[in-house]
Length: 444
Image (tube, rainbow, N blue to C red; front, side, top):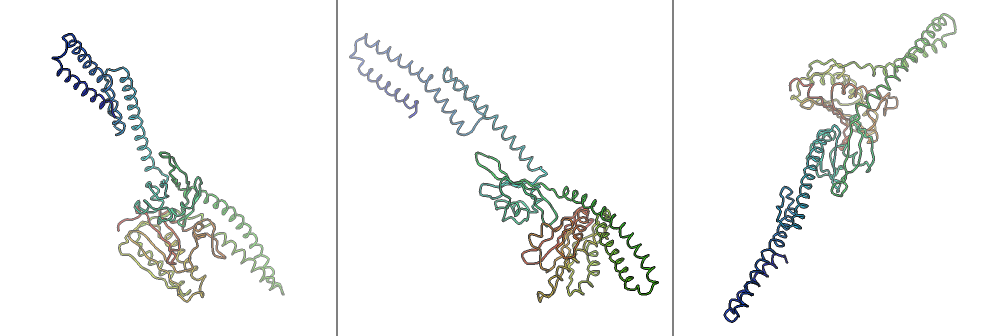
């Protein structure tokens, strides 16, 4: 029980004792009466002092404990005039001031960290101890290609994003470089921070696409130029010599076989020169010359151009135009070549499994409002292992492929500010999706 309660019991007891004395006052001696009155006065004074020195300070300290329990760090205790109690009050007030300043500092620090995370050029994904997403900053949402509601309170492996699925496979305290099927490259780190004594996992995502592409481009440009220079100079000298010898031998009898060999050698030299020239063309892609063009009309022209090739290969080429798609600023020749390459790749993919199935090859080219294109084919599809390598320099799944078609597509689309992806979906259809930047739209 509290001291205050004991104090009131003592007061009641003394009042009762005083009442008894008054009752027996007539039976007491006059001298004894003064002694008893003096004793009562002394007790009353003692009770007042006891209250001020013991009960009131304890009551004040109790109020301070209530302030601590309620975390009201802005309130302070007043001094009570009792030395020991005032020492405790001073210590308590200093402690409350420190707690207030510390809480304010933590709030300001947390607010600053929140602002820093929200404005960070790196993606930040924070998960709780159950592995479910608890916080995602705007850059991470952009990298994942989703909205906030699609990620919160879900395990990463259940988020509808290829990057999220890749993040879920990274072990703790490790860093991995992730290359996706849209030519984007990310450096992803899986770590944790301590909050209230518990480890909270988080992921840092750093976009490395531009840096890696620039490094790759510098490397293969230098290699291609060096190879093209050496090959073209060598083949030029060889073909010139072979042509001279072939013309000299053609006048001689019995030299027809040797002349045929000379012509075959010259043709091989020309083929080698054309082969290396195709590589050299990749590093000579001009900067886009932007002009207004109707996306539906551009796609229609490509469809008419590629229709004959598809018919020869027994492939149906369909066109679906969205009338809501308007006029865009594009380089017509470069963008048309991109669409031709994509349709050609889809046709070759279907042709590679021709005869293995009774179904006829299908390619559908469609435009999507406000400014998108999708090329869909029912070919054999792309495996997960190949997806991450698709836009790497000189990678090809074709036996005689050079691996420059997708590099050309990547370069042109990147220079137009487009986002794109190539993958096979659960329905078995392979889709090349292109999303043209909104700043290319004139009117929709």
